[in-house]
Image (spheres, rainbow, N blue to C red):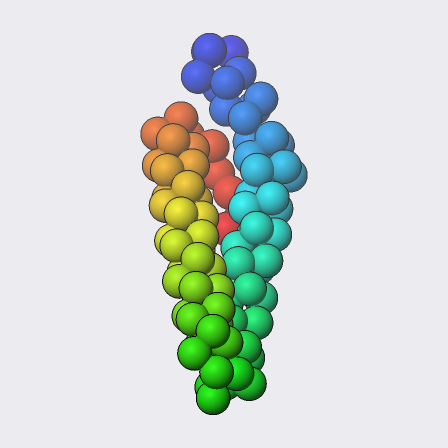
Length: 88
């Protein structure tokens, strides 16, 4: 058994069972925050403070989703380099 295979056997379950579900959960939370921002923006459309709050929710959630997609891409790049396979 080579060290690359041993490393692959060690990292595959960690990535598949811990890292990817956590990233998906955080991405889902950011998406819900995005939907909440849209709701706040529409609900408080007549108030400047309400619009600003909704816009900030939308902005922060988009930044969060972008970061999560970047983290997922980096993890996939590392996993593919090491030869670990993932269902996602």
